[in-house]
Image (cartoon, rainbow, N blue to C red; front, side):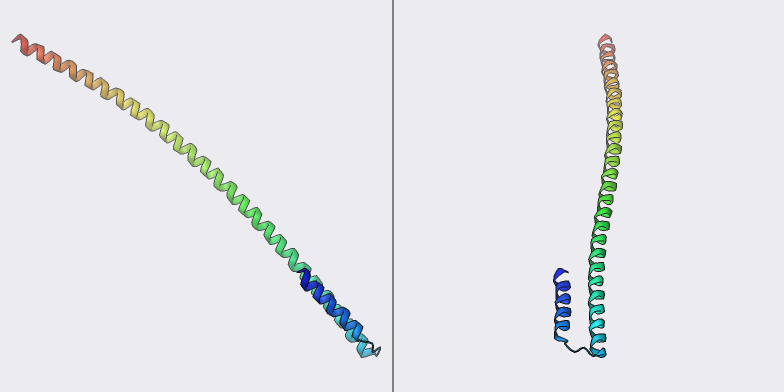
Length: 119
């Protein structure tokens, strides 16, 4: 951007220096050249500003998306932890029931063995 602006300014200076003609047509052409150079400079400046603004907006959008993704990951992690805790409680309860049933089965088997031994 700076090179383009400097090139446009240098071209204007050279054009103005080369024009030693003071006729009304030459003065009008010099004024038009100056106006064109000014317009080009403003356009370059506006383009640079727009590019900077677009970059800032892109960075802001990326930061917002990252924050949203982090929030969603945190929520998903919390939900997974809750499901894991619930599964662990269910497994502990199932283990307790299975242990109780196994104990009852052992008792029943022991009683049957005693009954057979008594016969």
